[in-house]
Length: 151
Image (cartoon, helix red, strand yellow):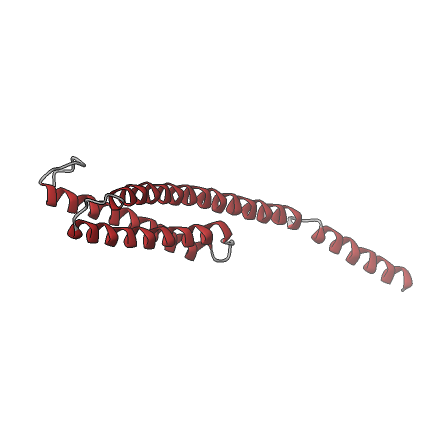
């Protein structure tokens, strides 16, 4: 009986060895590759969104400089000065929003990326829409279509 038990134990160990050497390492490699690909995709998205936000921030800075130049004119009438002051406040708010969202994008993790992405894309779209509305207001006030959009 000792030989029979020894054969059964050897057979059991061999079976366990075969099961352990099956597809488990390949599945582990596959999972690791999927994680790597996901992280690369997230990083690419983060880079693209961050670049868009930096461009918007630059646009805000350029407009802020234009508004500051107009406000520095001592001959600017009170009504126009008030409008430029209001625009400056809005530009500051939009800039702060871009800065905050850009910081969130840059520090986002895999776990919170979906939420950060959604809020950042919305903030960028809102800011771009705000700029478009400002152009439309200028077109309406000046009876000119400076942005050639038909309005």
